[in-house]
Length: 160
Image (cartoon, rainbow, N blue to C red; front, side):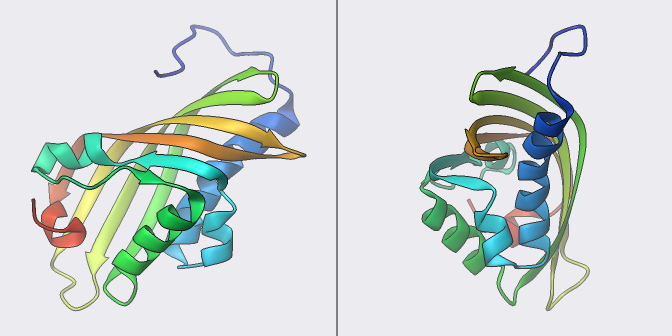
């Protein structure tokens, strides 16, 4: 589930950068509402599972399957309503041929544009599977688990 080896792995530096960059594209694509950048993080058949995170506050989102559905669902849900910032830390990587696993912590701040006092600050663990696409890497599966949160996630993501 998570990359927990007790030593650094012999992963080529270019792959290390490109693997983590997929998660950076995910975060910054949302933060800038940049559809092309956000979509560039995912394989065409990607799955994004936010259900473990949302379960912490009683949310029940669907499993999102397919790059277009993921991008449409997330960007449309925030458009004109929510601003976000994402910070990625503590990446751990394991590579096997043309697939990789990435574990990282992502802190995400979500604020309602109409009421800046309504927010959700989330600290999440990401469990990501990736596939090689030429020189870059794409996320094929993303599982997000919440560690802690402040604020009102239900106001940002919808009531349970």
